[in-house]
Image 1 (tube, rainbow, N blue to C red):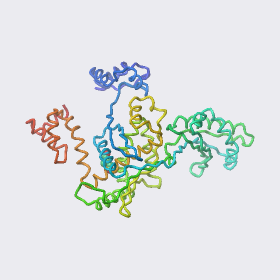
Image 2: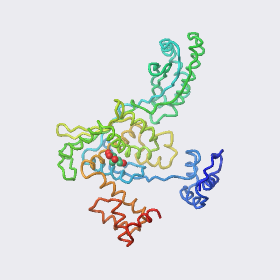
Image 3: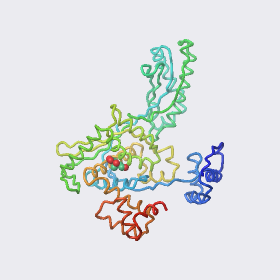
Image 4: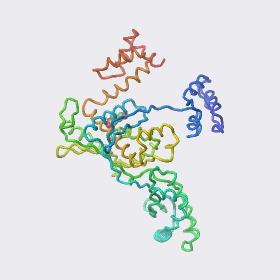
Amino acid sequence: MNKGQSIKGFSKLSKEAKIEWLINEYLDGDESYIDFLRSYLHPDAKIQKLHDEFIENTITNYYLPLGIAPNFLINGKIYALPMAIEESSVVAAAAKSANFWLERGGFTTTVLSTTKIGHVHFMYFGDGEKLKKFIERHLAKFYEDTHHITANMQARGGGILSIALKNLTHKLEGYYQLEAKFETCDSMGANFINSCLEQMAKTLTILIAESQEFSESEKHVQIVMRILSNYTPECIVKAEVSCPIEQLNADDDITPQEFAEKFYRAVKIAEIEPYRATTHNKGIFNGIDAVVIATGNDFRAVEAAGHTYASRDGQYKSLTHCDISDGIFRFWIELPLALGVVGGLTSLHPMVRFSLALLGKPSATELMGIVAASGLAQNFAALRALVTSGIQKGHMKMHLLNILNQLEATEEEKKFFINYFKDKVVTYAETVRKFCELRGIPAESYVNIHHK
Ligand code: MEV
């Protein structure tokens, strides 16, 4: 029985002591977990230490496979995309899309903007117009006070682009923002932006406190928060594919024209219907997150920005769009992607370094294009399957090995099943039925196998 006691000072325990405590409190004293957790540690102690220090309270590593989707022709260059993901069919789908578009001109990507945004959120209960004029007159001071933070970024061509007061008192009494826009070049820039904002908040507080223009009550400015926004609608990339409709050989039972029309409608449905849009965009993020994780970027930030962007008109919509006019099939994605190729994990995590090297050490803007293309490719593969044979055929084919591993099938049995399902759609029930038949055990006993 788990005791599940609370603990003080857990972070100060050694890794071994943490594991020991977990085993006693939560794992019925089963000491076999010690070797199990140890078996996931990296054999190179230096690399393991790196991983230990990425976060607090590390007890071991958690593996995800790193797969490769080759043949991505993007802006005339062929990439092999690194993808870190657990879902069986994602890499296969990306590779299939990449091959399809390789023969049809590939992906064209354009970075439309790279500006990031952050805010000092504060409360001020005085004259708004007076505050606005005051900030405008003192803008230089904000730049001057942040110079020690921005100097290096400026040398690389970035820095603070603008600072402005936003009056939001119509939404919340007394609520103002100091909104700053940033160019962070090849870094994602979160630490840079947050450091600038923290300094700006100090400058604001001091300027107002020392000014003769404000009454004593007006001087009671309360800084509530200083933080970047993960919504980056001015850091946008577009990726596109197109070809004559007659080249859309869907290798299924429908003509290219019928395929184009069904595909177009599938995108339209995701543009008007939030239930479908959510799943549609989830599929896009299958591709995006996998490359974002492989390249050491923050997939939560990317997801959050993408979903807000998808709702920017007041309703959650598809991030991809399609046009089939004048005999041409056009399919594109437009979304915010705040990515970095320097700073953060990029130079620390050995797999991230490998992934970036594999991509030819791209700039942040080049990576934005690559990631957008992976999202578009994933969505193309999903919709292509959905409007033709259905998603389960490809998905379950890739999932078959997971089912067989769960059943603890031998290599021989795996070979048999891959052949058995060559011309059939894989289902869990059929795999188990046939598996039991092969082993000569009653089908009902699959539950025992499953939980063995
Ligand atoms: C599964 O992870 C993703 C899909 O559901 C996406 C979609 O429906 O477009 C296949």
